[in-house]
Image (cartoon, rainbow, N blue to C red; front, side, top):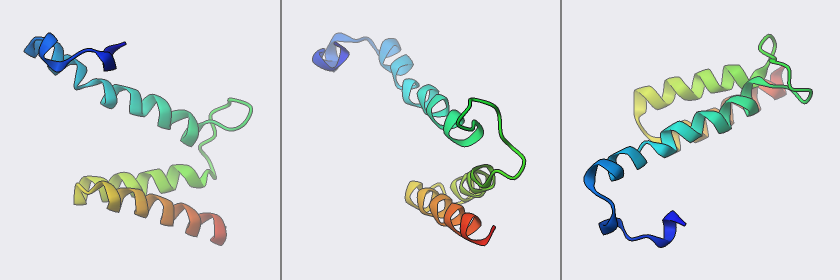
Length: 84
């Protein structure tokens, strides 16, 4: 429904509020994939996804580059699961 509306129909305040929607949705998508196991329990100890997420977060903060963040997260996850 919102995709059918034109940007000019919203005032500046509504556009500003809607600009935060992707930032609010992203953690809700990522959290279960990283921290929950197949049964829905929180799984932190020995979880290679948590360490890879920390590495990717660090690279993202330092580089402010989305591609570097994605590739560092993927590479670190693959290295961790193949080593351990």
